[in-house]
Image (cartoon, rainbow, N blue to C red; front, top):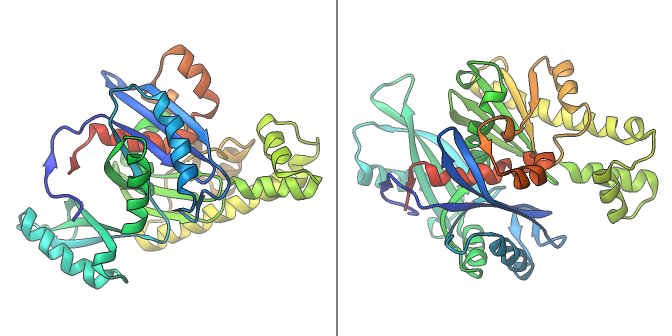
Length: 359
């Protein structure tokens, strides 16, 4: 088992999001009215260093993490990272509410052996009690999470190589759901009691987290992201990869690009989101979600939120933690404000410093 006992106070941990294009890191302190950024980093990764959620070039990852480490206060010794992809399995199971921690742990191993298509020697398992079961008060809902050990160990080893101890290994979808706290006040009053879908549009993966009454109840990933947009620019205008990426970021694309490249990409992205929302509604019995929060590096594409509103009829915003409960000194805020949405996952990880955790 990864963990045994709840602790009331977690140590301060830097949230490190190891993506396919960048490693993003956030260190937060808790304030009277939210959280403050103490330190941050965004370090480019060598192409292919992380592929299909697996570390393929450990040397490149460690080199980038060394640069992250240099941005942190020297007193920071602990980190929280996340795993995702097909190597991660999550399932909500129902267990007798009267079971104590040790009895629950023994039962979890039996359940895991039945659910996981690998030998238990090859996986790391953890669980979290969520809430009383809605249909049977004598039961509790328990979230069972499992991941191939090699995916967990490779991240721990990379962080240890730069003298950071990994205290928590999270699941990306749940870390994203946790970050809802950062942007909840951007939505209309009472939204925290509604069904909110967070959609993190990364380079290669779009991650979905549905939050209901403050709890993450559904997570899913789609292999689609901003990289497809870059590839379209590259092929349509005969640019190199670097030229296409730079033109996209600088907004220096041909006048007709909105019709030739942007609109088709947005239509594809909309279809991916619509399909995942349908899967959520089918599995949950809900008719729809009440709000959508877009985040990630591709979320700020021109007109994306309005397209979602017009096509789906769902209130949609681009998440901006600085309009929520996130604060920073003026210099940090000025540097981060244009792209703070891509740090949502790192923020969700960093928030583990201020929640119950198990060690």
